[in-house]
Image (cartoon, rainbow, N blue to C red; front, side, top):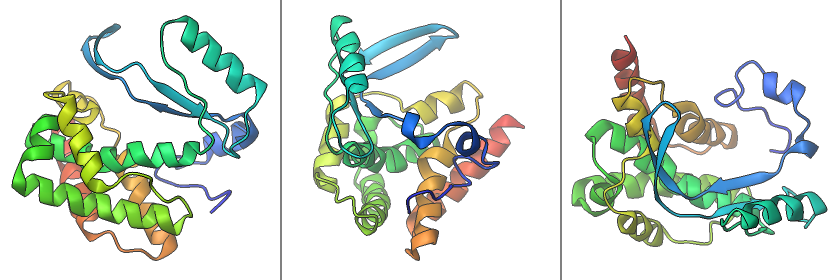
Length: 208
């Protein structure tokens, strides 16, 4: 899968043509925040920004970035397997973000409601299968991911915030990319496709 261009993330190949992969450092943003108004962000919780080279090496540029974050009072661990960290975050995002847009529910509600909980598990299981097929075993269970979301509490996902503010949602990056990866690998994602289709129509109607 190295060098594969995902149309859902870079439809015209602009990023691929202009940014060399050697210039990329992976980062997973964990803090939760709310956009109160343009340029005004309310921090809810979290202070960790995990970074890492895609090949797992520890480089001077990663050390410099981490030191700058730490001086600012934030946590910035340099991770040897940043791809795993990205998939752990995506495991929740691919399920919770679109479901929150459909239901207007908070993370806590999504993680604890029995019916929605079932759908979230199915979406996560499909993403987990894709990650493992790519050689990236996710080091947390779906149960642990659900419990982690419940602990965040009454937080609205970024996708729900975008919907409420009438902005385009990150459907391609958070959900479409997982479906596209599944197609490339020959892995079916039926539940994710249903959720994706529903939210895509919701977005189209909300922006009309």
